[in-house]
Structure formats: structure tokens, C-alpha cells
Amino acid sequence: RKEVEQDPGPFNVPEGATVAFNCTYSNSASQSFFWYRQDCRKEPKLLMSVYSSGNEDGRFTAQLNRASQYISLLIRDSKLSDSATYLCVVSGTSYGKLTFGQGTILTVHP
Amino acid sequence: DVKVTQSSRYLVKRTGEKVFLECVQDMDHENMFWYRQDPGLGLRLIYFSYDVKMKEKGDIPEGYSVSREKKERFSLILESASTNQTSMYLCASTSGGTGGLETQYFGPGTRLLVL
Image (cartoon, rainbow over all chains, first blue to last red; front, side, top):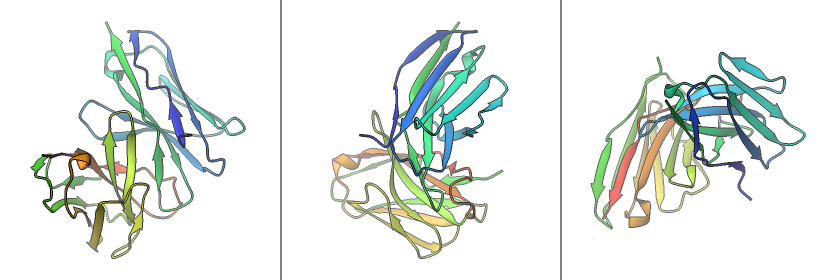
């Protein structure tokens, strides 16, 4: 079983749609959780951290369920510029070492 | 703004060649990482370093070595390149401290083709 699993998609949605991505992780000792965004042929960049209480940043909402070892990302009112690969990322115990999911591809069309 | 630079964006090498990939960060970060990214497999950690002259194996270290002689520079070495090392290589850095809560900043990547 992979340490971090995501549905690779692709997700094709119209502008204005709401889309949700899910991710599961296998290591119950994982401490920190993130969503990174990677544009085509670019490097990954941090989108947002994920907290147990849930957190929101504009149109983006992230949720963490430690009991189920499940992370989600909700994007409301999708924009064309949201088209990218979204990486679910989990941190272990030290040195900022991260484990990445394989990514979910999102394409927002007019 | 944190800047992580990599020596080459594209590289073509022949099987058996020794290959050096250089990474430099300008934010005095303690921790540096080398990943490779392949379709369907995501990013996989090759090696990381948490201090000068210190290194730790990641998940897929075979066929690679690293060097960190200065804090700002982390080099990935392919001792004898093979075709299965054709990939996108990404360097990243992060400050030390709270063990995983810090943002990792990535370089632009090097696309390596081994013929």
C-alpha cells in the first residue's frame, strides 16, 4: 500500500464548479499535512497546510480526519487558473521530510 | 523571497556517464532534499541533508550519491548514468526547527534524459 494515495483523475470541470479531492495516508504517526499545487512543467508550490480543525483560504477548504487518516481539498467556484496537479503531502517526524501522493490532475474548462 | 536554483533545466547524457546536478538556495536553510518525479509515481525522495556534510538516504537512493560541502549547495551525483534514471529531478529546501511544519521550497527542476 502506498504511504499517500490520491485519485489521479483527471478531473475535468466547468468554470464555476465545485470540486473535491481526497487523499488517504497510511502512517498514523504522521504529524503535518499539506496540499501543494504543481502547474504543468513547473515545480510544486505550497497551496495550504491542513489542520484538524479544518481551514479555509478563499475558495479553498482543507479538512483532516486523523481517525480515518483522510485529507480533503475542496475548491469552490473553479477558475481556469485552477487547472493544475494537486499533490497531497504528509510529513513524518523530522527534518521536514515529506511524502507525496502521486497527484490529482484538475482541468477547468470554459 | 526564497530562491532555489538548479544548474540546468535540461540535460542529455549517455549511459555510463557521471552526472552532477547542482542545487543552490539563498535562504540559509538547514535542510535540503533531492527528489525525482516520474509519471504515475509522483515525487520520490532520493537523499536529504540536514546540515553541512550530513546526508541521509531517502526512499530510492540506489545509483545516486550526494554532497553538501556548503550550507547553500546540495549536489546530486549519478555515478554511472543509466536509462532508468531518465526523469525530472527536483531540489527543495526548508528551514530547520519544528520538524515538518515548514514549507518546502522547490527549484525549477532538471529534466534529465539518459540515452
